[in-house]
Length: 190
Ligand SMILES: [Zn+2]
Picture 1: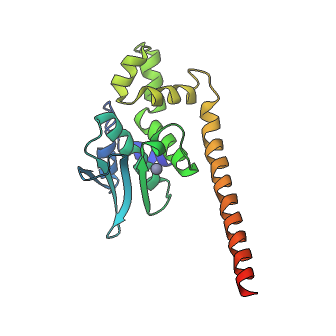
Picture 2: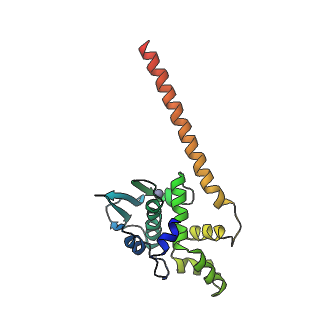
Picture 3: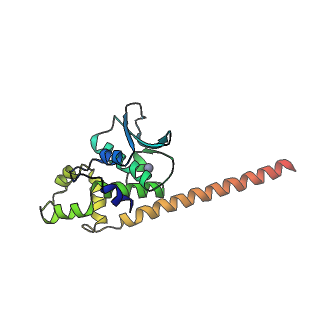
């Protein structure tokens, strides 16, 4: 499993240093101050080498999450180029790959076993303390708690389905566009 493979490079320290893990997996990590304000992260291959770039103007929590998300695109072999705005990294992603990269990021930053140890043995139950420990947003903490079964919700299961439905709608629109083009073309050739 991709996230397990990445976790082998974790030093056991919280918050999980996603940049350090990425680097030990051979991925370059850059922080750029030239990125568009809406853009949080980018994944690309430069001269054949994988590179993650994150926005210098975003805060620590967003940057850590963006690195983990882009690393997800890399580890899950999603493709050669991704640019992510806050929408892609939010909890309502528009594509299946973003939904999967988000899942990867949450599993990386909030490893299941460590999470349960903190809750059970160290009695870490205050969400505000949890987001401090893991260095994540409250929304992502809630998602992870749901995924691990600590709090009940259907949102986790529905997110990838919603993203898939959006992709199907986009594909249907594309088919209609191509059909219309063919009709227009046929008319012109008459
Ligand atoms: Zn993405």
